[in-house]
Length: 497
Ligand code: NAD
Image (cartoon, rainbow, N blue to C red):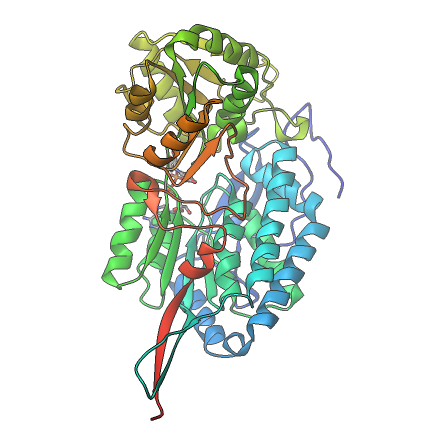
């Protein structure tokens, strides 16, 4: 597709969207909102209008759930696991043929650097590849029981599954949530975030083209409190996968509880990276900077706290400062290190947290300079490192969801563990040390769902089970375990004498 700059250095590109403007994709057809309303889609990089999505209503959700239910109890329900797997693999191939087009749509919609968007689309394809290959390799068990009986436990899909997707990695999150659901034979209703719907609609078209029956992959767009709330409370839903804020996670879980529906909640984090004096400090500094600036810090598993052994605190912060000062902040088209935040509200939230910290006298270690040529209406925020920060301070406790790193000194291993575990979250952690015994001890004692040793992985890693505890949520996505989450077990007892 052609990519052109419009005007003088704006973020706009000529997008090649195939989805019909302002419509949902339900039962393999385009539907306007039953309320007749649309929501403008604006570029986070320059504020320009790049499209329109439908403002979904409870009636639209009813239509999508009914379509999914019909598919589940009809044509789709009759597919073998191998047939389902082949369709997922075909979708993966189809996405890979379209990486460039989809990446530009994703970059324009979210503001992320184009190379990050390309990577996200490849990971999206990888989800369908991984779960396509796995679809016919997960089975049940034969259970030894009393004489005269044969007992098996078999895996069955839940039925119609709901997928409420956030705006930070919309394409990746779609793959992470929907691919294992379809591999297990569920039929999906997706509600992407109002700020980033475009790739979900494009993927739904491709799914239909490679042969998924109508009603298996539905996308209803709109606001969370309207379409999202209607979906999570819908009695036809049998399982909910939600990724987003802890506050909304609680609402979704309450709605699900009323219908006795299981949920997986992937919420936020305040993930620590622990740097000990014996670590390879240059490598650690590279990784720590990437861990908080990737996607402008809008990553649930962002390494937003760096805990540094007191004896090397100043030395390590100097390494971080050098890297922060060299970062390039810019528009997707220029493929910078850091793009804009998703919207004005998010920018305001991040700036407010930083301003408050400054007013309270928390030192700034380094702040990236923003070029005056950035589009004025773009939601750019200068990546910043604060330190030393008291670990009880709100800056070190609350998820900021922006390119803001908090540096906290620690005295020894016990102190480091206490600080690492001292938030309401428990998502990801890493330790940087050459001491093998310490690596093993910390891996056991730090509360998190993923633990990295001398590396860090925010996003990606389709094979690696992921999820948190506490305010980070519960349930596990990615890897083999997602197939178990997206299915249920039926025990069949046969008396034959
Ligand atoms: P959010 O929780 O409001 O939105 C996430 C999704 O939930 C969107 O699809 C939204 O439309 C939907 N939603 C909103 N209200 C709903 C409701 N009442 N019922 C059902 N669905 C609803 O998140 P946000 O406002 O877009 O971002 C705010 C904060 O959420 C961020 O600052 C960040 O801390 C967190 N967040 C976390 C992740 C993550 O990957 N863990 C992703 C995005 C945002």
